[in-house]
Image (tube, rainbow, N blue to C red; front, top):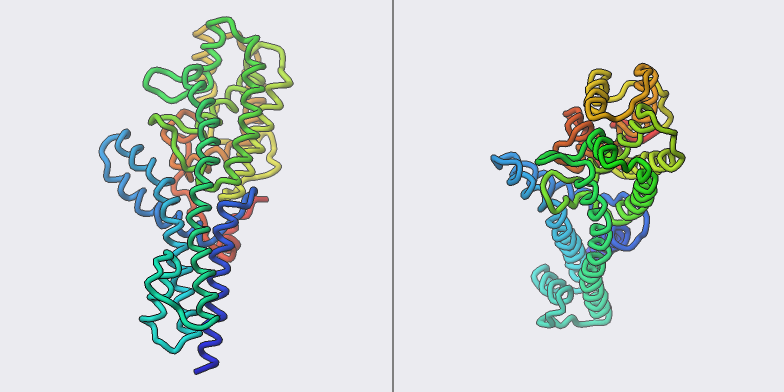
Amino acid sequence: MLVLRIAAFAIAALTAASTTLSAVHTFVLPRAAQVRLSRAAFLVVRFFIVRVARLRRTERATDDTLALFAPLSLLFLPVVWLTVIGASYTVMFWSVNDQGWRAAINASGSSMFTLGFAHPSGLPATFLAFSEAALGIASLALLITYLPSMYAAFARREAQVALLASRAGREGRAPWAPTMIIRFHAIGAFDQLDDLWSDWEAWFVDVEESHLSLAALPFYRSPLPGRSWVTAAGTVLDGVALMESSVDTPNSPRAQLCIRAGFLALRRIADFFNIPYDADPAPDDETSITREEFDEALATMADAGVPLKRDRDQAWRDFNGWRVNYDAVLLGLATVTLAPPAPWSSDHRKPPYRRMPVTRRARARRGNAPQ
C-alpha cells in the first residue's frame, strides 16, 4: 500500500507540475510554444462553437457565434488547469494522509480556492495546502495579466484593418486588392503607396510577434462582420503583387520589403498551426488564383483607367511568382481562423482542410511539419 501511495504521489506531482508549465508556456513565455493541454482545450471549444455556428441562418449570426470562440477558450483554459491541478492535489493529499478520498477532496478544494474550511494536519499536508493555494491564485493572475497585453495588440492590429476597409473595401463587400489600386489611382495617390507599404511592413512584424506570443489572438475576430486580419493581410499582399507585376509604374523597394515581411510573418504563424507549405517554391508553381481570375482583375482595373503593362503574359508570371510565396499559408490561416468570405483568400480555401494534430506524434504521422 505504501508503494502505491508513493507512486500515486509522484505521478500526481508530475501532472501538477506539467500543467503549471503549460500555463507558463501559454501566458508567460514570449515565443511560440505548442502546449498540448492548451491546444486540446481550444479544440474542444472550437468543436462545439463551429457546430453551433452552422445552425445559424445568417452570416451576421454565424460571425457573432464564431466571435465567442476565442473568449470562451480563454475562460475554459483556467477551468481545465484548475481541474487538473485540483485532481492531482487530491491524489497527493490522499497519499500523505490516511483519511480517505472524501477528506482529500475537501482538503484540495479548500486549499485551491483558499476557503479555509479544511485544516490539513501534518507538515506534508500543510505544505501541499500552501503550494496548491499558490498555484490556484497564480493561474487566475496569469489570465488577468494576460488580457491587457492581448487587447492592446488586438487594438493595434484592428486599427490597420479598419483603415484598409476604407481604402480597399467595397460597399457591403470585403476588401479586394484591385479595388485598393483603383481607389488610389482615382484620387491620384499612387505616390503615397510607399507610405502604405511601410505601415503594413511594420504591421506584419507586429502581428508576427503578438500572434505567436499570445496564442488566442489569431482567433479574435474583428469587431465588424466581414473583416479579418487574415483577409486584410491577403489584400495588401495581393495589392503589392499586382502593383509590382501589372501596373505600369516604377518598381518600389518598399513594396517588395512589405511583401517579404508579409509572407514571412504568415509562414511563421502557419508553422505554429502546423499548416503545410513549400518553403522554397518555384515562381511558376500553381497557386489558387487562376489566369482567368487574374485577367478579370486586370480588366476591372483597366476599365477604371489604371495604367497597366502591355505584356499580360509576363505580368501573370510575375504576379504568380509573388503569390506563390504566401498562397498556401494565406488559405490555411483563413481556414484555421474561420475567416469571413473575401476575394482571393478565404473564398479560395479548399476544404476539407486537415485538422490540427494535438500531439507531436500525430503531427509526425500526418506529415504536417513545414519544410
